[in-house]
Image 1 (cartoon, rainbow, N blue to C red):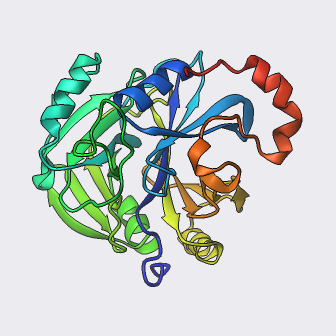
Image 2 (cartoon, rainbow, N blue to C red):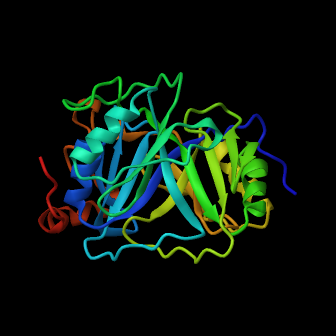
Length: 316
């Protein structure tokens, strides 16, 4: 088997990308209800007639960026095995009472989390059914994005991790530990926890064994892929070599403007990406005006007039 990446340069999550339906409803929920900053308005590079919307904290730093492909006609997905069961966000201790009340006030579903591994959590969902877990975490000093309604004492710090629902996690275990540098941290019930050896605040992956559960069907509310962070192109190339050496088909290097990417489907069926931390979202607009203008990659700039006329406007 291929060796693990040396010195664990894969440091937790980079971003998580999900499928939405109505872009305006998606925008309202993630900015006004969850209090995230809208950091980039661009298009799906592979389908430029579709938005790619990014939300996060101040600059959408790696480990904070939740992104969406909104397809207005997308049917609702079906949750099951072979998918990301929940995207987990870190919030400060003693903030869940605020979140329960705030989410209920805004019409979002709220239930207590299963609280595995000593976590204190609650679970909600966005208008498309994307499952979101808020996890109270001590010592997460990442700077939150502050809004008029959500005080920093309660605000989301970024990702805590993801939970993957699988038929059998044995081969996914191998990918996490041998290719991505995670270590197994314990099991509880049907869940096994893995943590990034780099110590990232966004470094938790829980594998949930659910044999006999029907397979997931992708649609609105489904996570499209989970991206893991590496510092630079050299590490990126090494990661690709190691994943490929495990007999897993990996895409070539792809330039996504704000990061460089490779993609592969791990044995449990979840699409993984490995993305570089740079260049970042301020490469084409200043920090103070992130998300204000439609940004297009050079290969789609010739479509600007058409896209600005046809893409549904987002709320102000």
